[in-house]
Length: 286
Image (tube, rainbow, N blue to C red; front, side, top):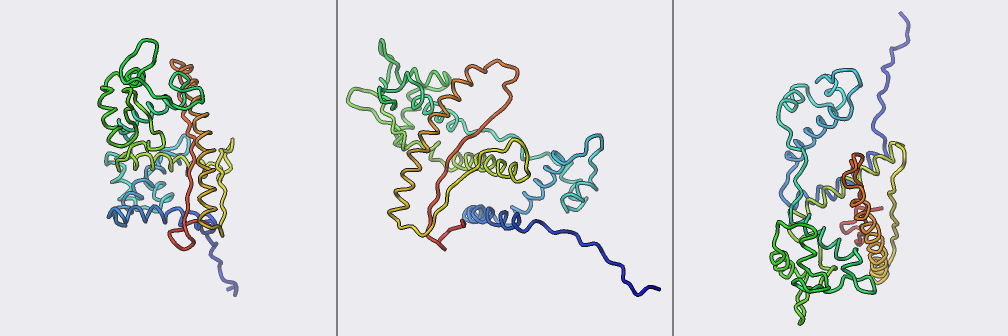
């Protein structure tokens, strides 16, 4: 018998850099979940469901049936759980977008970016509350987005939130800076999920060297004073909002042009964000 021992081939572990990145991006998510009493067992069950769903939907081999054994091999989830999850109705289908978020965002987008609602400086101009001969009114603006809701209801809610006010001439004045696609937790959570989904999807697309690469850039600086950070964030917000308005304006034009085209089945998202923190104080960055 040979003195040589049979070597067991080593199985490469996950890429170290990807492991670090995944742990880093999970920290603020776990912080958010814990702040709303969403514990590990709940998240663990979600992850199990999503692992099976993604494996079944995106890792099938063409021409071959995707068995529970293969899903078990891909995910590490026991076949009994795979079978149970496969037979249960999925709870991760298309999420209905909150109506108030859709409506409010569309109204503000048209008011801030379409020429008929802007003044000579390109800013959203005050609109007569009711129709006036020769002028576009607030009621006309709301009707251009939906005729299923009363403009007065929109105005009342916006006044409550500080998004809009009435001036002495009974014109509706937009406070665009106060418009967060609503201040309700449900609507902000909806936006968080969808915007971060696409941001992470863009990063994953690039990390997997898929073509064409997607834009995913940011700048980061530390060792700054509070005054310097404030100046930079103000600059970022000003320039960022200019970019958002320009892209939004063109997107509305193209969407109108593409309506009815059989090839109009694609979507896009362009966004900006900023973050500030003291080192060691909720700082999950570099």
